[in-house]
Length: 235
Image (tube, rainbow, N blue to C red; front, top):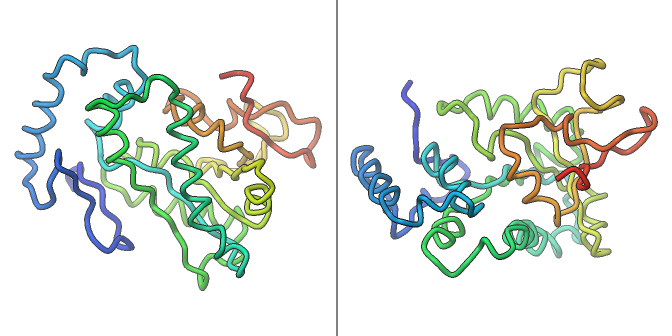
């Protein structure tokens, strides 16, 4: 099956579209639009992180976004859910700092953000990280585009602990590694196949791209019962 540039998931009510990429266009029309954008002067400004990101993601599959799992379904979580999702995008944008401007590449970047949220209590209420990993791996492996984009590299899990961190304003999520198979052959000793990440560090992890695995960016662990965290001092 040929690769598909325009990402869509069955849980979305309607396909993503924008003024730059209207819905229903042919592959040839989309390719022409991409060629037009890549001919603009700002496309050559690869020192800008937004432009760097567009080079990697826009030319491969669009819209971009994180894959997010919700595993807590309580009245309290209902109250804070939308705000938590907003905080994910806002922290991502904040992580870009001055590289995110009021200009065309930044507009394309922000308009192209559409997370895929698995929010089904019958399936995910109280799900373990191993269960999430299994589901995410099946979703990733079913993609026809080589699953190299941000959406497929790892997934974010919002559980009771993450929810309480958001309410207390420390705001972290769990990042699950779909490539984890157990054992000890990882760059961080005691690496458990996931790590916690403060939302303020989300862009730091995103910008690493495919260069490093999650075990490469996991901080030092003193033992198997230690909590794994993203090592923000490295990046």
